[in-house]
Amino acid sequence: MAVDLDAAALVGLLAKVADIGFVLDSDGGIAELALDGGELGTHIDDRWLGRSLLDTVEGDSRQRLADALAAVRAHPGRPQRIDLAHTLEDGAPLPVEYRLVALPDGEGVIAAGRDMRPVASLRQQLLNAQQALEQDYWRLRQVETRYRQLFDMIADAILVVDAGSGRVLEANPAAGELLGGGGSRVVGKPFPLGLSERSQRDVAGLLAEAQAAGRALLSGVTRDGDDTPLTAVVSYLRQGSETRFLVRFARESAEHAGGDEQALPPSLQRAPDAVLLTDTDGRVLAANKTFLDLAQVVGEDRVTGLSADRWLGRSGVDLSVLLSNLNERGSVKLFSTVLRGESGVNTDVEISACTVDDGPRGRLAFYIRDVSRRVSDGQPSGESLPASIEQITRRVGRMPLKELVRESTDIIEAMCIRAALELTQDNRASAAELLGLSRQSLYAKLRRYDISGVESDVVSS
Image (cartoon, rainbow, N blue to C red; front, side):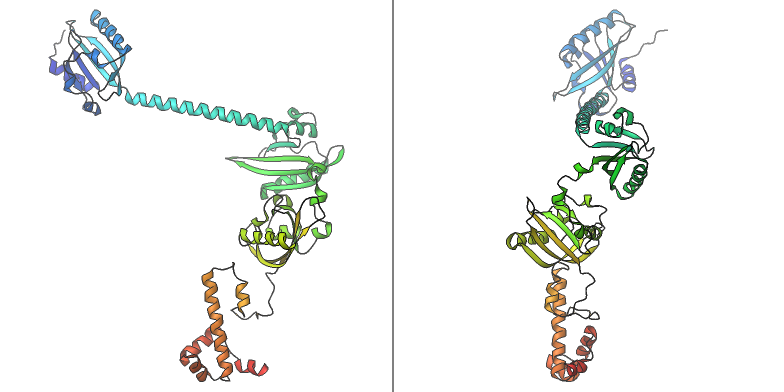
């Protein structure tokens, strides 16, 4: 049964089922226009009525649209799908997917379209994401290639060990040669391997130490059947949810090349005061155990090569002053400063330093003494304030200037009160009058500064 729809009903139906709809006449002109009331209304309006649909597209879209209109007119009951890109007044493209179907009389054509801009935007985002992923992929490939080349070129034996399973994940050729049979025979095996029985136990303990401290070093490691001493260095790495050990084995002769020049004599290694050997720029060459304890560092390898101002001085200024004086005078005595530990604990120290001339390159020796528990003769332990301006100046850099000025004012005020009491033979009323204070104010200051026994002080002096 055929159903006849007038133009108004047809336009209303198109507005419900499509984003945009046209009823075209026999010449392809736009006879009726239907919109869903959305954002498309700002671009397409009644000014399109009477225009040929072919005039709203450009390029190859015109020919495809002409072919599609001819096809649907030739087969009235068969719909035709076509993608078009309209050119708007501002020159922007408007991609639309159309379904074309001819009216029963074979003269007019209905075009129901869907706005493809959201789909085009998603496609563009997908394309951009794909391009970004490809760029990242090739960048990572380049990084991995460089890593592999460096990994294979290193003369020391390097292994990457999974902390969970304890198996070797990666090993460079030097590790395969050192621990036996080539790298492919090392990967996948439990670690430690290829070592003497005693060294295996020691290295297993070294892994636990590195897991706790982040890094650990062990000398005197030997292989199975070979007494050549090796040095093992283990670093603990966390990558997301995975944990790894980075293990390096080196022959001790290579590990300590130049060690005669840079190592401290055994007597200084056991010295009760901290000893630090640096180059002329202040970079650490060697340190004894006392310094490592004060700096709260696990091993000497954690300080070697770093600038000494990481631990010495209230700021980088102190080390600069020391280096400047050493360059000018050759030695420095009793330089007061602080030594900053890795955990944030500061220790008051005195530094004496000198240049060392027995090596081919310039070196500096720093002798560091912990004076944090020293009690000054000029400052009784029961006195809350410093006894002299000299002691105030020693605190420069340890507290802000505002506090130093306040403390200096208190010292001067206490000294004036003591002097007034001595002049008046401890007559508080006369001392208050001499100082221009009321008796109540004088008593308050006496209590504040804990001034008592002045008569006995005067008599004893």
